[in-house]
Image (tube, rainbow, N blue to C red; front, side, top):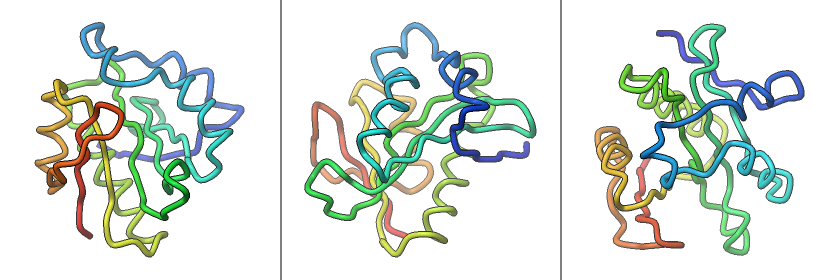
Length: 148
């Protein structure tokens, strides 16, 4: 496995919006086209393609919190792996790669994620990496934190 993260661009955005999760996961993650649109209004949010070598396998978005008055916290705002590639370790590999990127490029000592509480797979993934429950809920989602 060779995970590469690449900014969403004019060259790859169409491919990224064609990625799909399994039907029973659709309530857990916003469509990629929505995330790309959000990034145009929240300037620090970075929509990112997840590749295994040259094949796009997923999408993530990360950045500073622009919603809560720019408190400077770093969030992994979205993570999705296309239905064809799920269960192969790409989600965890992408998370580890983006965490390393954040450690290298930001000064914060914590990273936050949030997810729908019913998304057992997301909870298991985040906990396996070291994220811990903060006890907070935002917009109906559980908030977890990773101390760097």
